[in-house]
Amino acid sequence: MSREGADHELHARAEERDRISGDLLDLEAHTTYQLLKGAALRGETGRRWTAAQAFVAEMWALYDLYRAVLRAAEEVRARRGRPGPAELAEITALLLGSSVVLKAAVKPVELRTLGEAEPDEHLTLNETVARMDAAFGEITATLQAVDAVWNPALPRLEQAEAAAQELAAMSRELGERLDLGAVETALSRVRAEVVEDPIGAAPPGPELDRIVALLATGRADLERALAAKRDYTARRDRLLAAIDTVRQAEAAARMAHGQVVVKINLPASAAPVSRLPDLTTTFTRADAATDGWLARSARLDALEKAAAEAAEHARGKTRALFGLIQRRDELRGLLIATNAKAARVGLAEDLEATRLYETARTLLWSAPCDLRQAAAAVDLYQNAIHGGSR
Image 1 (tube, rainbow, N blue to C red):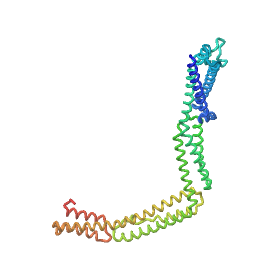
Image 2: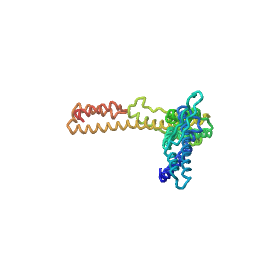
Image 3: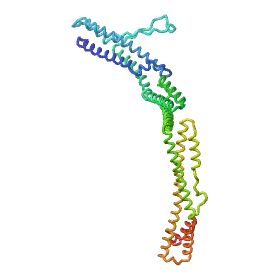
Image 4: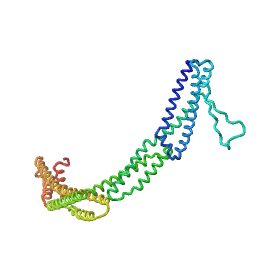
């Protein structure tokens, strides 16, 4: 190498050394690397990490040898301002030759022989860097495999654990114990699998989904129970008002039945059936109960739903009953319109048409009216007038 070539190579190698040093320090400062160093690993992750640590040791050993060779070359260069052929030859041998001596590993005594020892390995600086790069790649591949599990799973685990702690606090505020044993056991199991063997364990996503769903259900139950405890008096008053609404709606349904039954022939099943006694009995028992707020909240929910359904059922019965009067009036109007059509087409004096008309009219203007028979009679009269086509 020329003096200029030697200086250029020394400068390039110095930059390479500093870059490698920075990469090695960054590796050891990496969060996942630090966590793995302190973790009790097992399974596939334990095996991968053991191998990675061996690569780390190899990489640092190679780096120390690389740095020693470069330092020796720098010392040769520093002997003289203008190095002569001897110095240049020595620098060339160090920088370009097989100057890195990797001592042969000492075998365990049970694997040794009394023959020739294993030879040392001689590497160039480029070969040394390539060997370090390969080791670095093995280590980072392990870190990436761990990160692929930890990055999505650990934040979700922490959120789930925080949610479990919040539920425990809410349970204490409520004064009741919420059984979180199954959730806490599942969280501990998932955390152990994720932390100790992220590479070999089953994907934690589905189990975390199940745990999060259980926590959400528990939180919803506790929130309802706390709301029931805080707002019980107001909620009780609203429930009494809802029961009174049922009373009024059922009274309106009975009144409607009384008005309609004298006009329309109704089956016994058309009479309104009151749900009020069951509601009031259930409310009285619930109001007197002294069990936990979780159970009381569930009963309040059920009572509020039952009261709303009972009121709507009574209102629906009222609409249906008055709808029968409306149906009768529609049939009357249809009969009158068909009779007018009969006069226009010259069938007003037709004996059969007249008989059908009178039959339908008698049914529709009778009290109570049999709507089924009346509808059939109007239909027969229409067919007679329209010739089977309407």
